Image 1: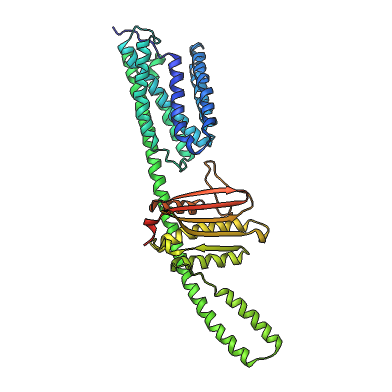
Image 2: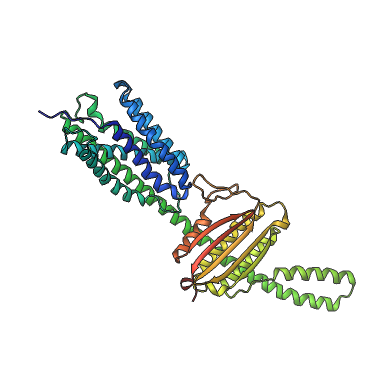
Length: 440
């Protein structure tokens, strides 16, 4: 006859729930909230989760599900307040943390009662064994989940992903605790040892299913990002080729018009006609202005963007040594400089005062690095999503954020990095590139 085994102490369950929340919060908090804020929430959340479990343990049996629902809600609040993430992310992380907590508590307690079935859970040997068993679960879970939280990147989660995670967590919890209802079924155990084994095994399967779901989400997001970046690269390169052709055509027209104006001026002498032709010459001369910074591709990009700035009454200042990026392909130059200037132009156009529509571009060497810095004056409004990523303010927002992502992706392809800083009404985009990888 099977020995009657004690159920998991409520304190252990509360500690497991807190540890699972802390694991996911730790992975998420690096780019979301100050650590002091997250630590304060976690410190307050520990006694709250434990006390809630202890209180649920003293409630009538028919309120067991209510107590578990309250615990899940408390876990969601801990994750929410310690990360300030959106509710889709919070719901997904809570579902994963809940199943991890169930697995952690079940596995640790199963080993404890196996080796010390009659001892108090608070005896030093039993407590030490429970802690060691918990580390056997938390350690691998930490390493496995870390890859799902790449630093500097947002989580790609949709509402459908949230509902799938909730469904998996609910089904896992129901199947793992079916034996505790006392109702015989093909999916429940009768002996206490079977009940413990089934609970741990089902919780493990649920955790692996949720992990596999995140792997699939990550793969799909990576594929979508790569496709979007490549499309943006092709678009920038096509724009560069078109701009190059247009600038060459304008240069030829400029050259021809200058000679025609000289001939007409020599033949026509009235003062009014002279003034008109002088005005025409000034306008044609402005069109013919081109940048010569030592890199033909960069010259075309700067000239094209300068024309866009002129159309928007934006003062555009450039100090650039194009030889520093001679090792970059035409597509990479068009992507880095084209996207950076497109973002700056978009922001500058929202400034109501034309005199404050300012963009400054600098390309210079600093030590072993090549530094690209694009500064623009803006109206003080930055549009971000729930994960802190900058977003476009265009009415048509399809493909928003791809420009900055393309810049970051291109820079990292050459071992560089991208940062964005705000000081007053100035936004500064800085791209750092190792000189050895971008210069000939």
